[in-house]
Image 1 (cartoon, rainbow, N blue to C red):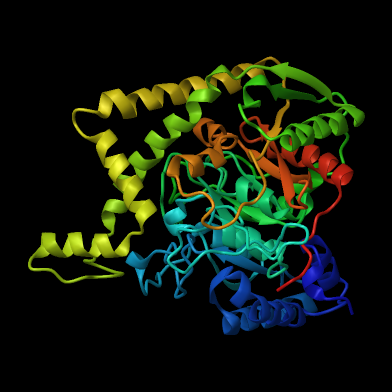
Image 2: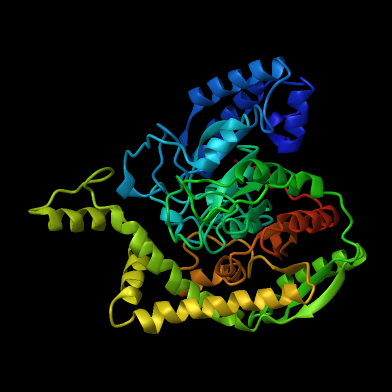
Length: 490
């Protein structure tokens, strides 16, 4: 039998239905792979082996009766931002030490209802703040990819670096992730995996540790476009516990695959040609355009004039919301508590010890821009800019554009510690933050390799709640580019 961990989620689903192997065998294969690889890759911060075996046995019993949900018996990894009942949920932060919630997030509840198996909790940037997975309290995740002929470790991107690395290293069939400014699409691009940030409101945020509530959205990272489509169908739902979730039917995203893109209009925004963009990123973009043109799509040049303001506006809105959301972590009810002379002293000691440097930086920025003298000058102005960014996209879609094609990242994966300037790190999200600011769906699909043999991704941006078109177009790119898998060194 081939190594079961190398299967795609769709292949594993079909194999289980055909009784080629059992969920127990599949789960055991992944637990063995995690045991062997995790000391080197550090993708998992908690492995739930016993729970996974129990869930797999229950799945096998259902499958034997000819029953079972859409994800029956399929082992997944869960980002440490999703509440999992009785299981480590700490947003990879010291301040949530020992926290195990008494409830399950809506997204993970949906997955378990469809029969999925939980392998464990995945590493991430602390409170989802980071673009390289170097801010986790549990240490950085190592990208399964290496430059050709090099042993140097590389970052997997962030904040969903554990999710992307686990999928790329075949340590799960797929993973949940979240995206506030690019945290699904950027790590997917840097690890040769597929990731989609759905439209804001497509997936419930209930039970997901909040970073910036008007920007956060859950989505899947998987090996293929088809796998992502299967996972999103289960993750998405309306939820009475999250009033920002949208009451629209969840389509069968898998059914959108295989459709021709002939006649679709693909927008190419001039503003995404940023200064200093490497030639290989431009070449990749042109290659993507050529593939879609060959498949019958019409290429249209468009303008999104407010793109240049997206990153600065994002780094006002996101920290402002973070400073508000993270005010609840004070050492009183749960998590870390560092004693002090009085309650204020205890708050200060706990927060100073519990939050990492990047989280503290963003809380301070956010508190500053929300303070009395600066609210209008910063936060209010950033929200106005956000409206203009969304309007740019609205006009493009009103003009008949079906999807927009851009690079996913400005470069390939880099080494840990290589980028020390916070602003230089924030620039990794230059192509992705606009999508969150406008609340649109965005998908990253692997499209090629850099000169040094590292994966590079292209991004597709769609109309609100039109993830189907993104899957349809992404599959054309995927078929033209082929699959990319890391050479095993771990």
